[in-house]
Image (tube, rainbow, N blue to C red; front, side, top):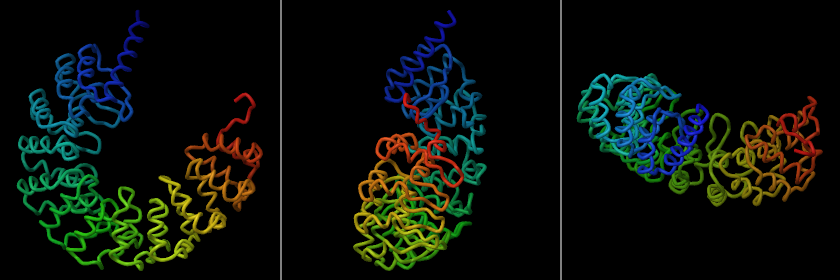
Length: 454
């Protein structure tokens, strides 16, 4: 009987997982009605009790009401997930004012003081709600404006968090509650609300609103790392924000140096959300902006090679000529080395090799690593194919100063199993058992079995 009950629970958990992953709200409500315990369910994006799972869904209020009727309110305010959050925190982050009203009716005003991970209250979590700011507005009306000044453990207030996720309407609401002075309050790393809005990935409306409200001088405020909102917007937003900043302060602001002496062009070159900021900088500021070096001797070309794709490399070469790809950093790394450690795409590396030829893969940095070694450490099978296509099998025998080959570097790759399989098939088993100067083989380092029956 116990075994049968366990089997049934596993079946129900699988059905819940499928409904949650498919966002099938009708099926989810049906399954919640069949539960006799608050099961823990692992979905594609989150593992936690069912009450937490439905709290994370924008449509989850009906399920939440049903589960509270079945199991009581303790699961809202007592049970924490592995991150330290209660279901009430997750509902504030993902659901609407109607859910806040329901939770308040169950738990009373005490729920507003419950803290989760990082000392965050429901108000902090509602400020992180990407779907709606109705939960934030409702909670503030209940808790009073002072709740917007409460700091989480990193010093962030709901105003900081809202600027990072939500839009101008939330900023206007916060101003009405506290006045404009709250936007100057600093959180972790000494960042103002304008700094946080500059990193908003979904919209730049909060950023524009805040600058218009606080004045263009707010763009020149530096955090503890020396970064201004201009640097952060270049790092996380697109060309529209760059144009807006230029209209406020002129073009010279983009060449001011921040953390590690990076200009905003360096930051735009590291922008993995959009390449439009980098493209804008080059076209508006001129090719010379690509020659600026940071504290490590790295140019925006180096950083674009590491974080963006062949389109940005084409832009650099069309602006400066192919020699820009051969400029070395202080560690003697060229664009080929940086493209080889690009974990998002191998297209920049493939394009650079097409421009310069395979010799660029054999250039050695100050650590003794060749660009082809770095590609094996950071990229997938496509880069190994590129090495074989352009240099042949012999390239897999090239070593660093410790006698390590491509295979040794591949053994430290997060995709090492796939890479080991490819090397075994395309290069041969010998490359996996060749010892480095310390006697270690790639197969040993990767925990890879060469047994015939594997």
